[in-house]
Length: 266
Ligand code: SAM
Image (cartoon, rainbow, N blue to C red; front, side, top):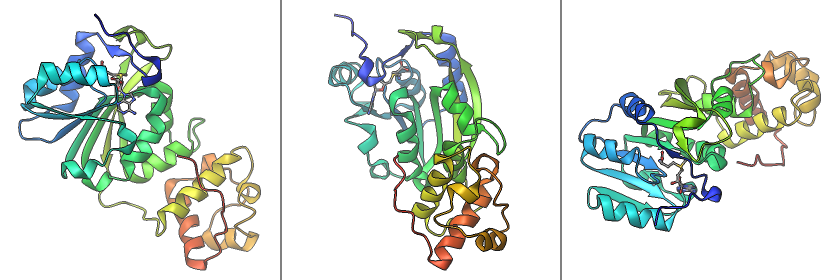
């Protein structure tokens, strides 16, 4: 019986051969590389990836799909049944290449999860909702510049590679999609001494994005602090660069005045 797509697992399967070929060409898989596919589904990407690589690791949450994939591709496919949000990527080694047509319902938490393992990752090629991609690549001052932009750009360079219309999938999603490449920045151009504190500062600033920083960060920064950091208290979160967010976090880490209690939800 054909597989019935499960909405709760964000199952929109790629069916357009040209798009599949473009994605694989962008990844440019070479034998011997350690490629990890997130959500292989019915194998639209796994098939050409395996043809190029000879072996592939993949993480799939849907038991039925996992069983069918095992049957078709074992032993070349090393399938990990489970939730990618709990997956320990470094257990597979270093220099990992992460790929996938992601389940859109978990894409933001997944990006935060992957960021934790950036040291073990060579690159990431993923299909995402176009709207999320626009936030990931937005520059300070753009209307799409958001918490996600800062957190992703702190650790990665991001490039939009391919625009993908809904018709490339079955069932067709209601939104446009795009494939992006993320490359871990090595070394980091701006280092937050306390990355949890940095994440909290960014979350606090964007939680009231229309307010000036003087207002949104009033519980942690005084007027004198703004002068010392060199940032205008009348600026809004959307106008600050990653470097400026890092400067605020490092100032707070150094002065020990960080009293941000709410932890950013990931
Ligand atoms: N790669 C296939 C393709 O392009 O046709 C399927 C892509 S589909 C958008 C997303 C896939 O991720 C589905 O196979 C789904 O079951 C799987 N998935 C959803 N949530 C997951 C999770 N938390 N962990 C691992 N896989 C997940």
